[in-house]
Length: 178
Image (cartoon, rainbow, N blue to C red; front, side, top):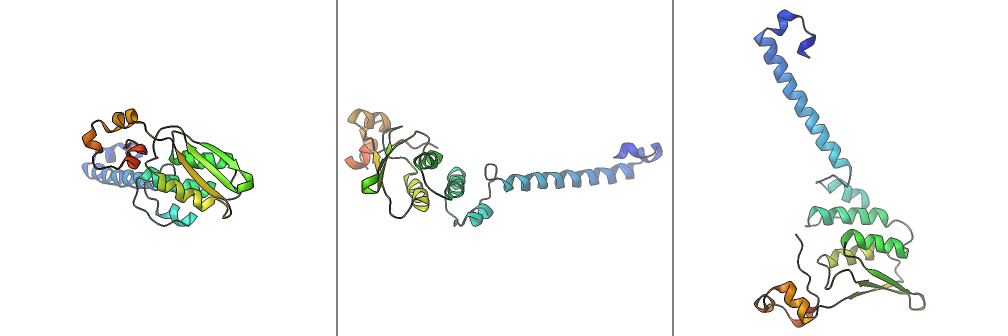
């Protein structure tokens, strides 16, 4: 901006100070606008208050990825739930994968977490998201591939680490990913 002024103003310390202060304010305003723009989109936000309200969800204590997944799941969950949509919904939370089998005569669906042994760390969020979008007459059965003794030893390191767990918990144990 200062380049547009006549030369005698460009050399003035007072004018330079004023323009420097104005430039700092403009930079701050631009940074604030960019920050607010990031909050508008679910993939870039770190404040989920408006997004949760828009889709009818309450606040939860969880990491940003889980909060983001809940909102995306609610958005995608509008309408009829098909097998591919259910797989896609679960894949938001569980990247290791799953197999889905429909049992039409029994009105049940079996979800087998076959991508990794054990129970997914965020299993409760998966169940909650699926319950929100599935029809009321359908029952979802979740199945996990259990750990063998060898798997448990690999995941837990030493048997001392397993002392606080029951065998059922060890069979479904999955190393935490942070």
